Image (cartoon, rainbow, N blue to C red; front, side):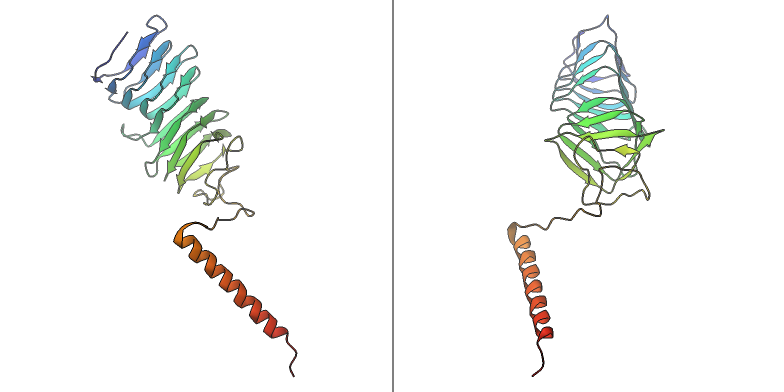
Length: 234
């Protein structure tokens, strides 16, 4: 199956008998229906919006270099997702309040920015991010046990105002290292500010130089006062 034009579809299912199939370069609105792949599907450079569920079966292979996928209800992967340069976005455009993740996937860019949205990660699953991890105003919740979110070496993060419970980041970079967990008592290994972590002071640009100057002046003033107090009276 080969398709190259803009498409509005109720859903897409790829069986082993259909593959290899290509939807490379398409722009496709699935109207909250599912993308199910049990064969091989090429979606290089494609854009998928309003996808209800993305389901990649054990024999499924999705080649998604440079693709953009807006997933709403859930992402489940027991096959292979090859997504160099791609972006997967967790959305609420299907009137859903949460997006679930099951199986193990290496994403390039992964984004969730709907305020109050919940990302439910299956226990034991690992979602890796090689490019940019963007999380703002959302909650990440391990379901029935610990799940893993791993920002790989070389990846970058844009994270703000998130709540985390039972989602472990110890397999990758420290996440949100200058922030606090929005879920009180949430279990979040290798996330957030710790007792030993310090908030870095910028050292470049006018603001950084001004802050450094103020700190040096304060230290010199404190030293002078300390020396004065130690002098013996004549």
